[in-house]
Structure formats: structure tokens, C-alpha cells
Image 1 (spheres, one colour):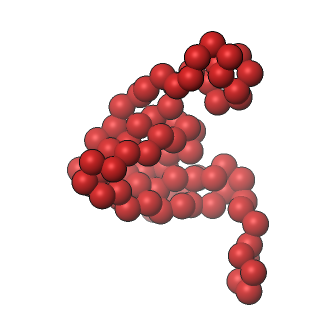
Image 2 (cartoon, helix red, strand yellow):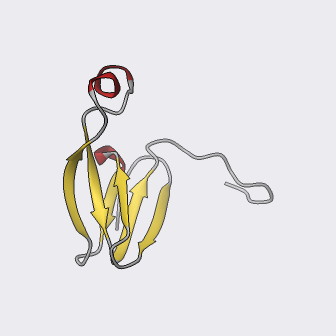
Length: 80
């Protein structure tokens, strides 16, 4: 059971595939996924970008589940 905020987004990473995620959006991932903290952008991004200095880098292969932290809009034809 996973508890989080908003909606969950699943991502299957291929071997060597990398994604950068805001640490607060990371919910859970499989044991074979590599992860680490990386700095992003320069001084302007840190001060004005709204993302902060660091993000989590996830490296496949494996499965990652992210949380949106707020509800995503429903897709057309689907009910919430």
C-alpha cells in the first residue's frame, strides 16, 4: 500500500534510461533502480526557477512511481 498526495504516475525505465524528478514527487521505486541527488541549473535557476538546487536522478532499468502532489485533470471520457 502506498499513500501519497495527488495522483500517481508510473514510469518503466529501460536500461540506462535516466529521469530527473523533484524529490517531493518520488513515491516508490523498484530495488534495481539506481538513484542519487544531482544539482541542476546555475544561480539564476536556484534563485528564480522555483525548483531548488537539487533533484533526484533515477536510472533504469526498473519501475518508478511518482506522485503529482495535487490532483491531475481528468482525461476526456474518463470519470474521476
